[in-house]
Image (cartoon, rainbow over all chains, first blue to last red; front, side, top):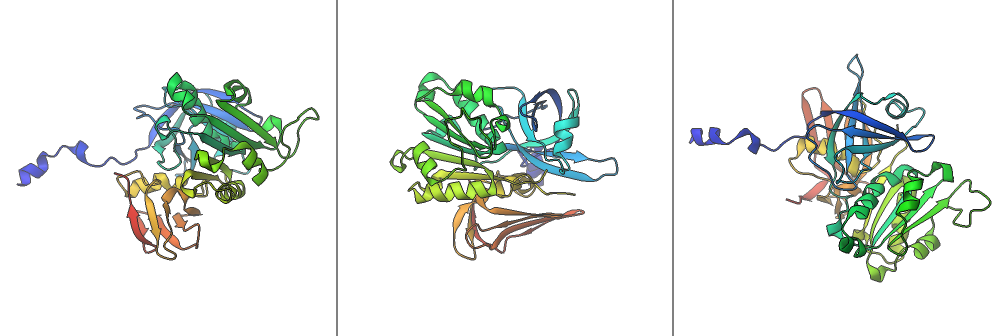
Length: 259
Length: 88
């Protein structure tokens, strides 16, 4: 019997999530504080929109710092794009945003996540609510939606409500304006600090009236994905449930202020 | 190791949970021993610790799941859980 046990191939053992060294193949400045890192990851198994990776930096003395960053790119691309917002007193984000260069290596593991994920099979309508850099995992969903075939796309109407401090803080602004294709894909911004005098849209934090106006009614049973700072996520998720949306259809991901 | 994370919920714990479990765990349903709430691990509240993580019930704050990494060991405290239902 023992020979039978030994005959089990090693690959049958559950695979641990291994750290791999990715190579930065491109960097793109998105806003004055946010940068996209495009990575080539050896043996990348593919990912689902909404998933993230862990990034690990190791100093020469062995000190390690680890963070999680959402994947912004859709599964159709062969590279993996992370968008990182710089937090000036952070340990990791200043390095990723300001120092990492094309050709550099970066230790990552992933993809990670099975709760805050969406794919065409989940269906719609799809309500995306972002605060600040919380747009990143939602962007992977929007990009996936844009690449779906016409019949899949038309079956899933999408509305994005994106809260940012000011227009200059909007990540992927040009692409979002390009992706907007009402009534199938609607993109709504709200600016909480500064907006130009000509701005006719929302100028306040997301509140219940705004959600009621932007979202579908609960009878349409949208799938909601809410990502951003904890305060925004809790408030939006609570209000969606108060408006009558099923809590099980409101998925949340909280971004904290660490760096 | 510094494990302060960018996220403050169970989604961010997906990586360290994969050090313990063979399955992706953020979509697993956890039943809280404190109040009986059943919800996805990804929606638990994460309190980052220098050595690991504590995931708390968003309703009653009970520590549902704790993982501590010490040299040579991963320590898992599941005393806040009555049941984990893991998609297979």
